[in-house]
View 1 (spheres, protein in one colour):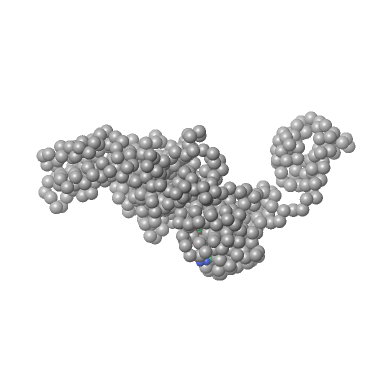
View 2: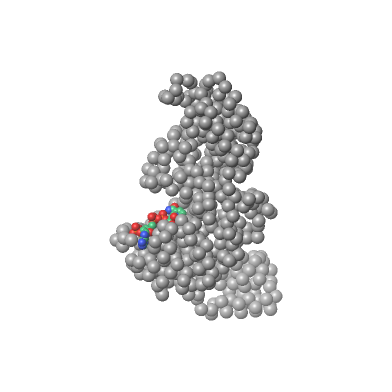
Length: 501
Ligand SMILES: NC(=O)c1ccc[n+]([C@@H]2O[C@H](COP(=O)([O-])OP(=O)(O)OC[C@H]3O[C@@H](n4cnc5c(N)ncnc54)[C@H](OP(=O)(O)O)[C@@H]3O)[C@@H](O)[C@H]2O)c1
């Protein structure tokens, strides 16, 4: 056999024994990704190149195998049990990808006897997640229990304090303690991954920390709660009310028995607080967010918005303004033609507006066992490979204090739905209050089809919808208070912000 022939066979045997690709071999051994392809085409490498590559292959073969990464998982619910299943099923594939085995060696949950569809025979069981976090027999601690304090906080702290890397999917924990935990991680030279904490399976944290690490971000907005998006989508598509859609979401397991956290907008606010910190290099400030949920959105709003070319979505939005950083979560009119309007059902999406890339929209499943476990796994692989990035994108001492731009200074367009008494002077009074507040109206629409009755008065009621040009929130609120005081409307005016997209 010729030298070249035996060299070619040695290369092919090396590639197949390791499950490598030809490109990886070329890049790693020959410094040229196309090396193996050239070889297969019959091109002959120089003899000194062949000698160098044979030596590199021999060194590789003799190198001791990297020690496995031993993982302790606290929390074996929807996400935790799925993660363990994936690691047990795809372990060999992952080892090939990262050159090191990743093995679950210890777990913790509340009930030891519950069947979770995983093989727990060869793993160590801990009743106490803090003891698991500190165990000598793990290299990485994964927290998947949930809760902003309690065992989640105690165990994550315990791991970081001894310099052990941590991966968590816990947005509540991050929103509340993210800066302190990032600082603790940096002080102890430990990594802290939380890809799954925002928008489930969508890799938005990695995109912000690494992919867009050098970009200046002007605005981030997104649909970050699948329950709300499911409800609003069905209300829009099927013409049914909020309560019916919520009941269905609960039946399908998309909404909790107590849905307040989701439909009240608070879950979105937690995720937005984390994103805003990564986008703007500021401290995480979940309590400074203006939050309005979707419970007051009616079929009338969905219908009128649709006729005007809009959909209603619950958006979390953070942007720089002259006064600081605006963070707000509220139902929003978005043009039907915008990309985010097409994100329906339980899907999530995050849009990032940057200086050089302009707009980037990441869309996909925001929750569920497999998508969320996939994001947890992505953090685990980064840690196994030794990737090191400050948890919040910049070293925690470089984070600026959060300067809140007050909501009353927010400027944008508004949709206002009023139920006005059908009496002389009512409409003129409404228009004059708007004009006096300096609010310019883009359109005024009467909707006789939306019938409203008021048991307390014998006059008929007309639904009027006003769309404003860009104006200040404070002016709108003051004008509506005066309109209500004039006594020409019944019930609360409906106010929905319009986002320029
Ligand atoms: N589910 C999703 O789609 C999703 C998406 C994104 C992020 N997340 C986040 O992922 C985390 C886990 O969510 P999940 O849906 O998997 O929750 P889950 O189904 O309720 O599971 C929670 C797990 O934690 C265990 N646990 C609770 N308290 C414990 C304690 N004191 N000691 C030991 N174990 C304890 C529970 O044990 P038992 O099973 O014995 O009760 C259960 O296995 C949360 O932070 C959540 O916000 C979830």
